[in-house]
Length: 269
Image 1: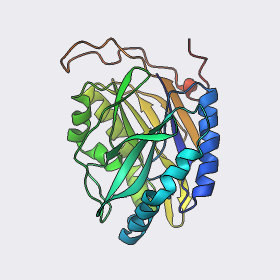
Image 2: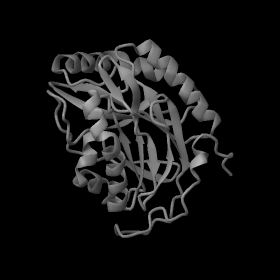
Image 3: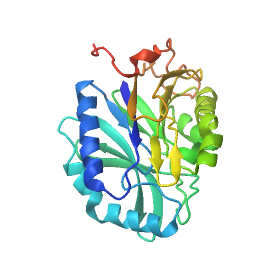
Image 4: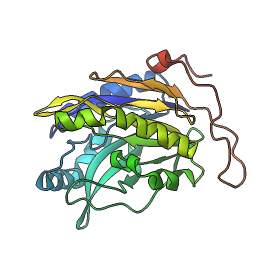
């Protein structure tokens, strides 16, 4: 199963620009025969720690913007996982939305939200693409081993981490090494592959160095986008035969891919 994790420049409140960039990235993913494309946390309309901004963006996404986005995706693009604030009745969630064939296939709501006014999710759904079982955690969830374990206990091969490390400079510097260390720890803990997608660059007085990477079950980084630039980390995730039952299995036991394969993989057999 081929995954592409995109490191993107943050775009706040400009759906047209975001759709243009998303279309470009997904066309590239289709050319590279990608099965699953991962984008950052709250990439749709942008992340925030302002309660009013979050509520407004959630209303917009839930008021028809998501359907508009689905209509504008390129034909034949891979399954995508992309973040947004969404409103469900009276609650606002920080969601990762799974889209395939131009329609929403499911959602994961951040279990450990650190944004004001956002309700914690309680479910850990499992999805499947190209034979790979995957679940999702979001950003701050990586600090909580229980969230990753809830996914791994459902016999997942892969855990996706949409991130948004757009932070005040001093805070961003503190998390620069901790973000990747958390991902490596979750891989070793669960025996799953890990993929993250982050924003990068500056936005107002905030900065994100970017932590977009693919980590194997041994905790080794096999692909990573360079800090400070937009790009894509890409890898082929080997899927081991799945036993009938039991969590103790070699999920994806294979040699790590060479790091230089992140930008150009050969055609799949």
